[in-house]
Length: 561
Image (tube, rainbow, N blue to C red):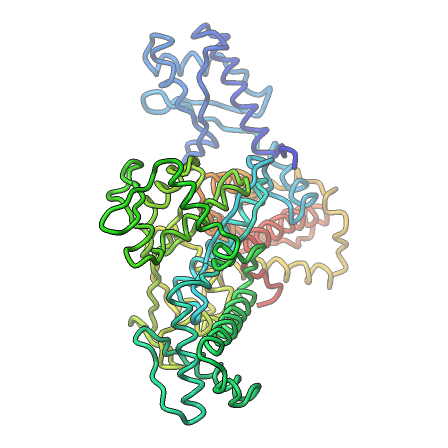
């Protein structure tokens, strides 16, 4: 994807060029010596459209105080010839600019022409990234923490794709080790119990209703024939069957939650292909392991970890870290430029040891970016919810989808930075009021759709909106909407660079607020046919952008509410 040149970007470049020209012509410093110019939008609209602190940046070079520098720059500006209408000095030397708003009109046609692709940028062009997220053990239902990881992870994937990266979504299936052994033993016990035999669940067995259901399904399909199999063969059967059923349920829940994966990577494949022993051998060849107390250790303290880590216990079994090292070694071998892991808050301490292990293998640990999704607390009727009303068990992602709906979950779970704790108000999430942010934003989209239905009923042809006379858009509210539309590419860029999809939730909420204010202040369909077309073109662009951003975070954009 080539670099897209957007209206606001071009406008800001014109302002920067005018500033550089003024600095050079005033004799403050040579053109080549002008530092990078930072432009900001003032919080107070009465201060203008853009502001810069370039006068402060030039104090050492120009050997004058900021106020004098600002005065020289303002005197050297050719206001009126480009987008700058006026410039004024504020405080110790800030310069505020007022721009010719008509330069914003092309935003409408850019949005209408690009449609669902509007907002694309190319900062990631030519770069491959992998994002591994959710990766819940296939031994039970997805819970709230997994749901937040799924919502944020999928939104981040969408953001990075819009920013030009080639993105691979990956789910790591923990289908080896103790937890899977307990799954097969639990299913074995439930199968025997359902056939009237005495059997106890293992100490760390799985108590969930899904295991009981799977056992019943097996009886319907296989009868009691599995009882006659040798223990090892029967448990291997239960292991494969249990994993298949649990994974199928996880996939169904994620599909319903609008999350898809490109790669489902099996932990057991690491053993089957010899990658675990290969990784251990590679660490040994590099002199990174040592023996102590009958165990094999990795010297992770050499790379910033707080203590060395055991790879092979004194009973010969592997720790959890060992296959994880082999898995991440495989990620590096696949040639990604960046690998993201989205882990739950309980894995925070695991980050330094994994980065240390990658460094020990000679890989660049900076290529591994671990993002931590903090916990979610549910509230209903002002009280914290721990149990599902439907099952009496811990609330699962499936329960929440049933009770609240996917749109609200995806919006709310992406609304805050993933490294902050999230309190989820279930009553607010299902309410149809402006206090509910997802309703408020979706209603903005539906409101515009309603206006277009009215236009159709009145026989107004809306096919040629791109050719409307945008000079008829003159109100401050219209210019505010134009500027907000123009900001989306920069928001996509910032969200990608900061790994922060929650920025887009804030952006679309602010756009919706501007739309609702505009709707209350102005009529879209007026007695002036040309003005009506111009306003409809603006609203069509707003509708497109709202739908685009909601799509990024996995939320629908309804046409009626």
